[in-house]
Image (cartoon, rainbow, N blue to C red; front, side, top):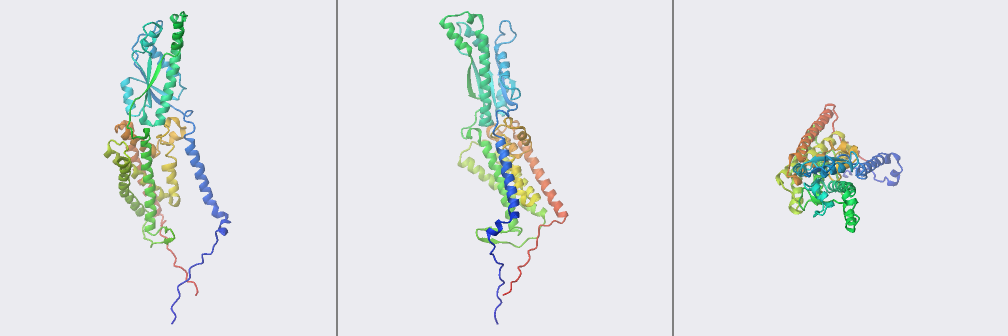
Length: 438
């Protein structure tokens, strides 16, 4: 008796050239790819092209410690006059000058609340007026303080603005001095030399107002470390999402030429999301530990408050991962694309970690109110550069992580429970292959 022949598999003779002529096959990938390219270009490039013209209320401290007397015929000393001239030398609305004492300025530099400072010394009036007499011994000096902890670009912009304003103030004082009778009536060579000096009498020195470590990437380590946390949470959650769906039989597994499809496990959407979120919580412990191992132990990144940094890193990574799982559960096949825009595309240009928010268009400042990378970068920066001070952004970081947790749980389980109550099951019975005639 002849043994039964196995059923023939369907023919695999369809040609790619035939399929390429089908317009419908091109439609969805073309539209989605084009939209993603267009939106990413607008989002990323729109946030960096015009930092100077987009400036809005850049916080810089103005310290007037001048104790000299008022000038003859006036009610103010030169330090007060210079303060007014410095403020007027910057376009309206670009800089938020904060009149502070030196102690207050140091405090705000140490918490990242100001991006720099201009310090007018106590003897400013005395040293300037001495230039018109034979008692001059030193050139008047203003000090520009930088704050590299807020980011190299933010500190640089603040320093350039402050130096330019100080120079304009020096020229204004120079015009006042050269018009004085003592200088105007001196026609000697020494008088000519003095007039050249008096035309721009003030020297501007630059110092670091709040120093940070040498292994901080010039203030960029906080941004890149935050980016690592977001990417670890985003990519890890998608790996878990795809891996669970494959293991439960809701997605095919392809590894090179090998293709498998496991038996479908009957499980509703809510329980599937609970499984994925539980795995995200567990695996995030491993990923954040490895991030710290690589960045701190291997590469030597300056990281004070190591335990706090790990705890914040874990919670940040987990908040991102839970958010990605919730979005994937709600949006299905396009969930990963939606999550990419929420956690990456919209978050990077509005993070304020490379270009300060005061130097980006208003749309990005609006995004920064709720986009996660902005909140996480503030917390990481506070831990790495500002002695883990609550008012340097750490409190805001913790609050937004808690809000992220709650939003992910409410949105994710709210959507899956809704789908389950509607009877929208993921279980799709797979028909048995049709036997082919021998």
